[in-house]
Image (tube, rainbow, N blue to C red; front, side):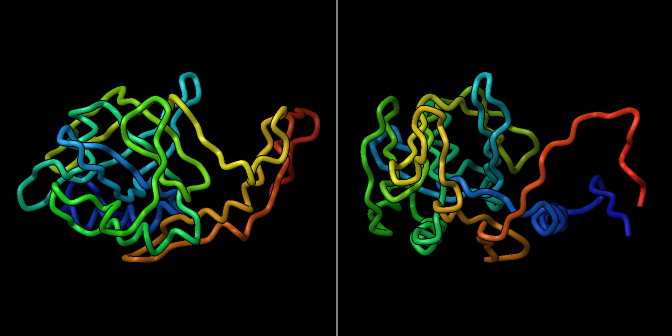
Length: 213
């Protein structure tokens, strides 16, 4: 079956993308408004897109009723700063509580009882329990369509909790021990990263191409 994405309504396009591009890492984004209110919200339209410089991207949907920016996007555009905190299993419930549609003057940090620690280079704080946090500055914010803003951010400072560092000199991490979670198909479905397998990257060999099965 084929789906012409150009002809479908947004809700249908969302279902197709949300149910097939999985698993998606979760950016638990902390921002600070110009009034000083700390916002925390999870986004799974998120990934890294480069390392020179190190870049992340966020897909931030607008309020469908008013077509206005939600708190995270408004704060990033106003201040140019945000923190991406990755989500572990132990934080799943607190992260989910931050997905509520809280008023702009209400901090989800306080609402969900989340402990934070100060960042080094940006105003928004880190979520203390997150295994990994990235302090970011906005490189670009693009309104593409009426209902979404795409933010590209440069990672200025990376924080990895000490217990997950196995070799400081070679920068080896115990990623499985972080127990990071991701978003998957449908509403409210998540995935653990505990089931994995490894394949070495092959070398090109013109004399012995891989067999066709």
